[in-house]
Amino acid sequence: MKPLLNTTIFKSLFPFSGMFFMQLTNLVSQLLMLPILINHAETVAVGAYFLVLSFSSLAGIFVNFGTNQATIIELQRANMDGDRNRLANIYANAFAIR
Image (cartoon, rainbow, N blue to C red; front, side, top):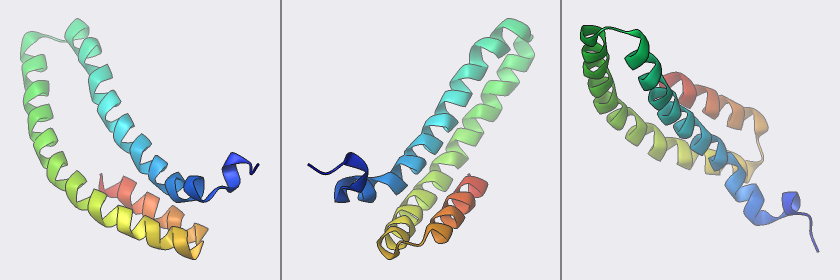
């Protein structure tokens, strides 16, 4: 029986797990800010935060859609070539854009 790390399925899914965790941290960071802000800020500041959050979420939809599609294709190409430097470069660029 092959170890899990040497299987083809794991090698194909590994680059995409980084993109999943990047999206997860984006969502969780916004949710963690809510209780902190509500407990420590005034009503006007909370309203301003929600306004900024709604516009940034709207902009994030367009940015995430574009980077998700292009990044997945480039990650698969770099993974098939086995180019670790290119994989790291793609992750860094996607993280910087987001």
